[in-house]
Length: 83
Image 1: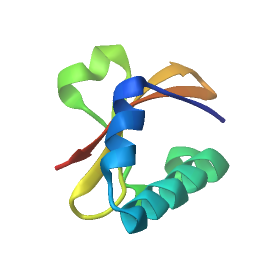
Image 2: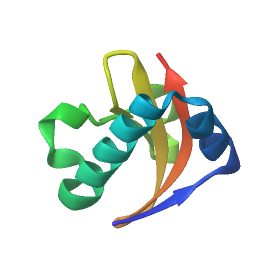
Image 3: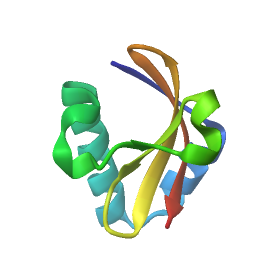
């Protein structure tokens, strides 16, 4: 699995507290290893952008990573947000 990071996502990530950055790193590592099958990721498609292949995965109860599928094994990280 390959992840590409947008400037906006990188900027948002750098603004997070260090403990939250570690949680994002852990969740993305799980995603790379197991894909969307890992239950705690709560990976789901964003209905509003379903035709564009935009998904979200859960970092914590309040934080999400929004990503877009480019190919079967490649995603573009769009942003980290406080839901």
